[in-house]
Image (cartoon, rainbow, N blue to C red):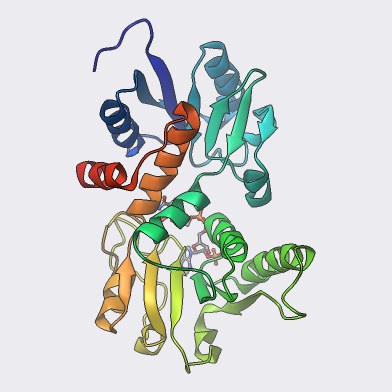
Length: 291
Ligand code: NAP
């Protein structure tokens, strides 16, 4: 890559950043699209977050990705926030504007594009989400926006799932409601047995259970749960084939991992920074190169 006086810089801020795949994704994108752009990781500790954002702006950085633990904490340092990111309450992409950085959330549009690319549809589906953390909450909002028929949040801490369901239902009512029916429901993990077994479900695995190095872990073990699944979408990307995915497949369902979500959240950030549209064929090429 020829770095010269015209090279634009983008990067990632987080703590830690050592294991990130984003430099591989963005630098390959820049190379394949002929963009004079370089992408580097910056290890930023919480107490320096504001200074880091200001400093990046002063250094004329074109954009930044933001990862754990700064996705919420970065919001006060932005000049503007995109409505979807405001609704989700988390920002993972900063785009340079005349007055400062504008914050976006490309994780959920990234998941949506990944699911489209994997042939998994949401509209009209009854969806089960495993988990009720930050990502599960955002997924529930995506499912509402993309017209799923309903959502059941199964979580170890049921109060957390109930809070997410309440927030999503409040938005559903504001947007016209579901004819008096609740869009989202919360159940403790073990109560999956209450979910009607007369049909099969799309399940989105949004807990951290089963991530490297605890690859043998899975949030629900019992066969009876996997018999209810036609498609299992695990948001974990390391390992690329989780125990959850193996159990889904062993019971005849289709299973996908979170690698394409990671790829597409990066692609959407890249499109925001450069104004270029990345075609699906190029996305597939990047996927094969980086994963
Ligand atoms: P989070 O806010 O920390 O939530 C973690 C969730 O996992 C909670 O629902 C928690 O349940 C559950 N959990 C943790 N340990 C558990 C255990 N031993 N048994 C049962 N449940 C357990 O995390 P997050 O930010 O939402 O992220 C969730 C996952 O999403 C991450 O681990 C990552 O794999 C994935 N992710 C993927 C991408 C991508 O691009 N593919 C991007 C972001 C995140 P409690 O509420 O009971 O604690």
